[in-house]
Amino acid sequence: MELKNLDKIVTLCKTRGFVFPGSEIYGGFANTWDFGPVGVELENNIKKAWWKRFVQESPNAYGVDASILMNPRTWEASGHAQGFSDPKMDCKSCKQRFRADNLIEEHSHGETEAEGMTTEQMEAYIAENKIKCPHCGNFNWTPIRQFKLMFETSRGTVEGEKDVVYLRPETCQGEYVNFLNVQRTARAKVPFAIAQIGKSFRNEITPGNFLFRTIEFEQMELQTFCKDEDALRIYEETKKRAWQFAEDIGLKADKLRFHDHEKLAFYAKAACDIQYKFPVGWEELNGVHHRSTWDLSRHQEFSGKSMLYTDPVTNEKYLPTVVEYSIGVGRLTLAALCEAYDEETLEGGDTRVVMHLHPAIAPYKLAILPLQKNLSEKATEIYSALAKEFMCSYDEAGSIGKRYRRQDEIGTPFCLTVDFDTLEDGMVTLRERDSMNQIRIKIDEVANYINEKIKF
Ligand code: ATP
Image 1 (cartoon, rainbow, N blue to C red):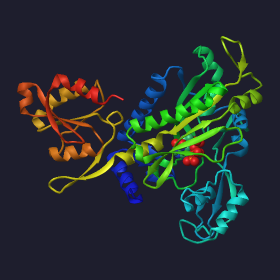
Image 2: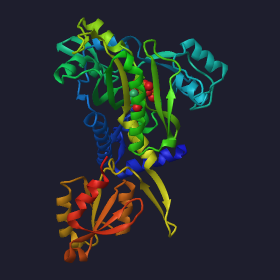
Image 3: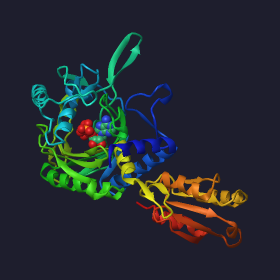
Image 4: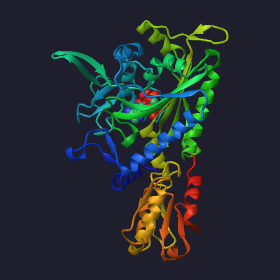
């Protein structure tokens, strides 16, 4: 899929109520997007599917919902206060700003990894390879400057007295600081996991590619606390589970690949991304990291509080190793939208745009369409009953063909039409989105039939 198709998806998202540009009436606000009525359902369904898989169906996994604003010492312990910055260069000709590591990786089509290079090494690489500005094509760069990624705000208790606080740049610190709270209250035994879905904030100034990179985004994270000798096995299992989830949600295996990190943080034993083939190329969808005991040891050091786990059988006290799995909700939503988007040529030569979203994540499960307006009483009655089961859309405006197309474009897996026979025989027609096949079914059987199809 070419870049232009990303434009088509952005347009469809806007016109059909998936995603609107943030603060649009003020000319927008770079790298922010607002989810509309259809998009918010899609996003919520993705989060529900993830939570079901990694919390509900996972023994020894427990959820938290930690504060966005944390004690600033957290960010000293995590290292973000000192070092969370991006290497930026400005093009002196067109005044656009870019991440030096991205310039290198894009120029080398992902062959050269800039992560781990020093500023000098990156500048040398860009000079040797004469990497030009992607915006204006000139080679006229400022030196690299480090640009802080954490958003700062302040908290004042007394007028004039202010403390700097940060909007969290990642959710995982909320899991780490609550490690013993969760362990004790859930009476959890290592290995166990803490999961969280929540907002993170990063002052990203590079082009966002729609939902791929935003300054405010949700992360879904699973941190597994384990014995060090089990960590590599759990790391491999987590990679497989992350992949399986991506496939189950509808991403095709041939558009997924593992990408092992060559350069690791000094404390890490292994790190891998799962990449997805977005319209703009292969890019990180999620990360899986073996983080050793680094995070808990840092919090122990900076808080002065013991983070040691006591083995209930042997009484051994130790800091567990952490295996992290982290995925952005918006990024996964974008992947699901890209995968689902299709333009089909129909028999008569017409084209239909259809979103082949997995029924479990589709915003509406069913659209209720009376064939004629004077059937709306019966149709409304059916709508009221079925809306108790799942999200239903109701539409009586326009020809039936146009109404089907509207539902296809937002990925509704089933359309139910009410006709005059319905009043006599209590049956309705159910049309399936992908095959466009139609079946006749009793009204009373519709809920079970659809509930079966939308299971995740
Ligand atoms: P990238 O290299 O793309 O900046 P990262 O390696 O910094 O990502 P992590 O810090 O490991 O990413 O974050 C975990 C996940 O959170 C990513 O795999 C991605 O799905 C999501 N994510 C990170 N940054 C953003 C962002 N700015 N916008 C949307 N999602 C993001």
